[in-house]
Length: 97
Image (cartoon, rainbow, N blue to C red):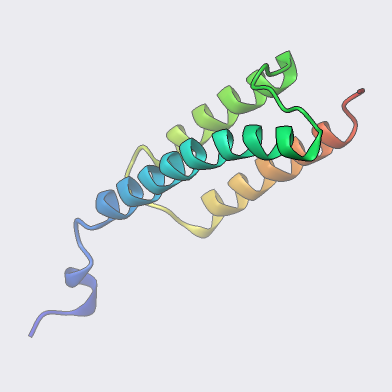
């Protein structure tokens, strides 16, 4: 009988691929819907991002890629990703309009 640890072996990359793939699909669905919904509500939303938004997206992508590159995850890497989220949230909160 195989141990529970061996049944999970090699499936980390599958989980990461599914997570990243579903995130990309969600973004590709939500972004156009928000543009159309904004038009209907009288709040036009374009996809012209500010410099801070572009830097935030690039940094979040690079940090996430570096943390999941080894195919393993632990609580500290998750904590670091939450820290990046909090830092970006604070930055966007204080972003001048």
